[in-house]
Length: 616
Image 1 (cartoon, helix red, strand yellow):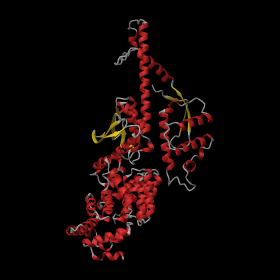
Image 2 (cartoon, helix red, strand yellow):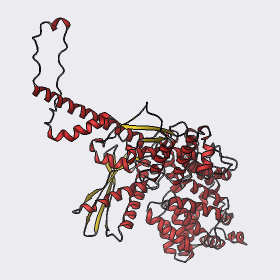
Image 3 (cartoon, helix red, strand yellow):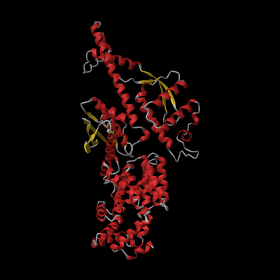
Image 4 (spheres, helix red, strand yellow):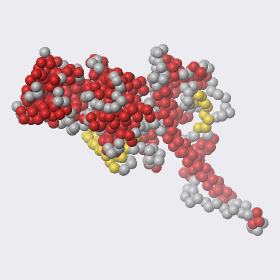
């Protein structure tokens, strides 16, 4: 039975030596799930507090001492200390819920400051007594499940009329004591469970980590095996899937301790405790060195299963670890990646809402819908929605990234909206850097920075920012697609091809616009049928480039009528496109050989024979 620790108010405060000893134990514990810099953070604030320099424990000094920031660090512009403090508090809470729950001294960082607090803990005498009663309980008779009704209330006038009461017999006294002991034990168990629930609730719903998007809990995968020794496979699978899911922004994932605790206590699997939107369950059937992994995602709000998957994999010691990681990544991508199951669910829910009614996360989902086709009819509402989101939620890094990308689109696609900045490209760069400042370990800010640099003609800077984002999240399929299509525009086919192959292997539902990179590869190598197949995979509404590429390809295939029809669609988008097609692709940093091929292809399709003069 878990003991509940009470703070000892009257005890002397912990000595400096005691605090330093428990700090070293905490830092070395595997249950203290903190990054190295957050361990430096904790060490710094503890030492400064012990040295009596609490007044100096400010965000600026912490950033210099623990986060390697320079003297130009601005806590107002860079919220890293506040963000990491929230993570550090959760790591401490987790530690004291697990291996640190019996520690005699506790270290905390109360909200509202960064000064450390130290307190002693003592096991409750009541909890110890309850443990003793739990040990004796098997030999005791079970208490009646029906509560004993209270005695009737006596009036003073009735007392004299009651018959004299005989003293209780020894047997009845023993029975009463046993009932009282069992009742006390039950109350203590209930109190312990309530405290545990409170701790878990505080742990999984911290005030400084309010989720914006869907909330998902992963219940422990069920191990179906003849060998108890195989149980570690399903446990490891659960940990790996949770770890993979946490890499996706705007997804609130309950930690593994909560998943295992709630998964083991079926009475807690209610939304009154967890308040999750989705639950991921699964099983591992292992036998003879092979296994069948099954997973299923259910919408807890409707009770409907929205996704399922199963696969057979080898589970021999030599390849088990690799297979486990691959499965975890596959499940997480299918569920949480852009344009995956959760996106489709959210998109369906908000489809009928006007932009003015969209909340922060819903606005981001609407942006992802826009990015599939760059539909101009959605543009102005989205700009307004993102501006309102930032005003309402100024620490939402992803909103800054989305607005940056929308501003770039006013340059690359000529999108129109009221109130656009005079220099949208410069504003896009500033918004992208703001997103990175708010969430330096997230990849979305680097996506926005990459696109803004690329269309600002900082080609190498754009590629480097995309690589930085992929280093943070190797499974960010949008960044993979962006690198793939940019390498194609640069005619760097050996780099483009594997990136785009990886993109569609990881995310078959990736925006079809990235197929234009594959189209260019096939077209430039003379495989016009393969080029046409890539174009046919594009989603509607098609934009001007889909029609440009169709016109080129049909002309090369000798289908002149279809080529002319495609040219007419190009002219619907831009009646003067023939006058600046080369400039348009050079604006996109296309290699001159690629631009020449596009110009010649359109000329063959019948779009103004004067096109070739642009390249002279």
